[in-house]
Image 1 (cartoon, helix red, strand yellow):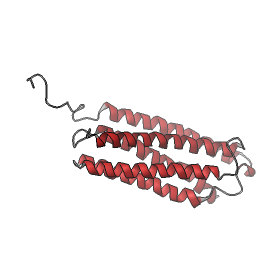
Image 2 (tube, rainbow, N blue to C red; image 1 turned 120 degrees about the vertical axis):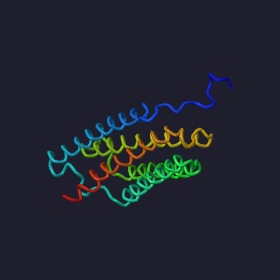
Image 3 (cartoon, rainbow, N blue to C red; image 1 turned 30 degrees about the vertical axis):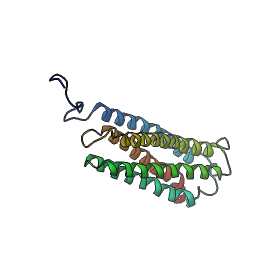
Image 4 (cartoon, rainbow, N blue to C red; image 1 turned 180 degrees about the horizontal axis):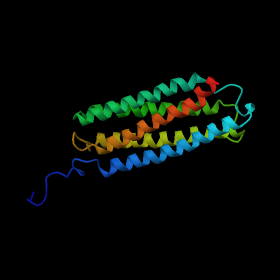
Amino acid sequence: MSALVPDTLPFGSIEKKSTGWWGVLCLVATEACLFGYLLFSYAYAAVTQSADWMPPKPPELTLAAPDTVVLLASSVAVWWGERGMKQGRPRRLLIGYAAGFVMGLAFVLVQIKEWSQKGYGPAHNGYASNYFIITGFHMAHVIIGLTALAAILGWGLLGYFDRERNAPVTYASIYWHFVDVVWLFVFSAFYIAPRLG
């Protein structure tokens, strides 16, 4: 190569967070506000409506509790994979992200099964509308996160990442962890809070 053309591409932002990092944080902040508004509307309705607004029993934990554990475990797998890539171990990235993807997909399938077992639909009443809108928005975010994990897996298989060049791995991880944290709030609002009276 000539002296004017480097052998490798530049790293991008040097000694500061990249624009992509700030971009994903802004995305997470705006989406957190969306879920904050949705959960506030649910909480407001729950305290201002009559007692019969809510179903006689809160949603069952039979599927939701294990599904929550699976989603949290997927976050651990993604974190493990990302950490491996930053240590120069690309195989760990592939294993961690593949495990995270499979567990995330399992979460989606269990959530769909739980929806199908409800005795009501989104138009049944205000509670049902809140339940399906909020869990539906979360499901949409999980599917977007699964798409990001799949993209990272594909690029990882093609060898696009190394110890220094792995910013997209971090972006996907941040988004996936955000999706998992949001579920903890959704799960607490619909499955735990009603049991606390």
